[in-house]
Length: 141
Length: 115
Image (cartoon, rainbow over all chains, first blue to last red; front, side, top):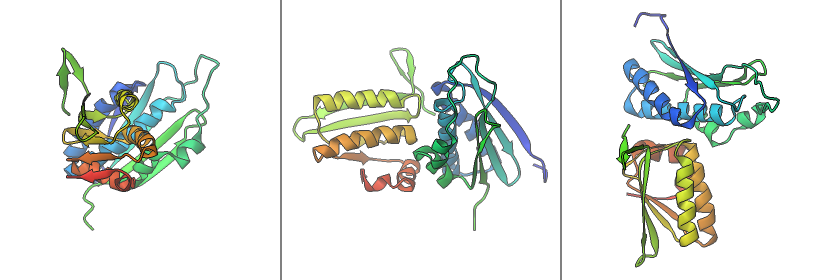
């Protein structure tokens, strides 16, 4: 991998629980290729599952929809973004994303923050939430 | 990722349970993954078990490959009910990655971890 080159892998995933395990497999493949060790890969799998679980259960639009997962793979770090597409819902029953609930978290967010090196939870223009998390390769201090 | 087939259908999670009459404890084996997809099945099984006998649960986690907060939430809920009768959840043969998760969350202090 060249210095300064970041590869972007982008997934659009149905809002369905059965796909979270598929996302875990994807991140395993990407993280393994980047040189993360088994323990780190297991950690990343949990963190990404927690973020996807949040996207599915607190998803902006509860209807049939997709959410997005971006993997930005660089020489020194892997950054993962989990977000929904922010397209409005046709139905009137729009569930307003409760950022407070997400920020204060539940166990899921706490786990993400414990596992990943950098974590940001951001509002997507009021149309959903972005969970952005980064893990650095080779944490030998 | 292990994929288990039962009656021709791919199972992400298999739950084997047996009530041990002599020790008055539930012997449960979890095979596969507990996440948002399978956590509700886990919860139903535990509910059935507790409705039948509210006794301690020995969870053999040797073949439990993955668990996250969805599964941990189920276990916490079950433990709350068990604690009412001074019973416990005992987790055996746990994998290092899952042991680490229990430690991060402090849950290694509320579940009994053996082996």
